[in-house]
Length: 59
Image 1 (cartoon, rainbow, N blue to C red):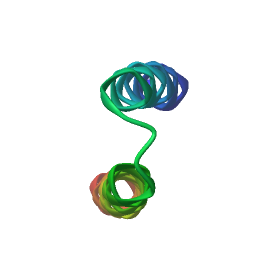
Image 2: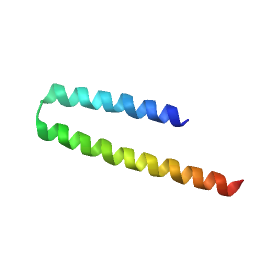
Image 3: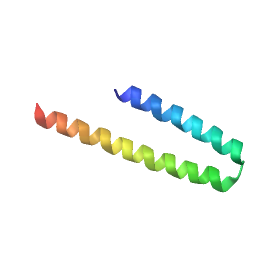
Image 4: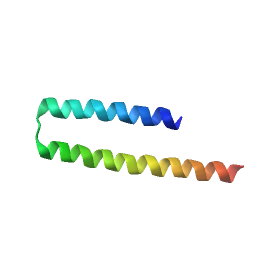
């Protein structure tokens, strides 16, 4: 499941990056995208850690 989510995030990132490049090679747009990806990565890691904690508690 983790790999599936990881693959989804990579494909979504690639699509967003392509869309940004088509719209404009503006540094601001790319910087904004990088910030969004960074926030998404942090949230993803947090979710995975929370899942692991709840799983270990249930056992």
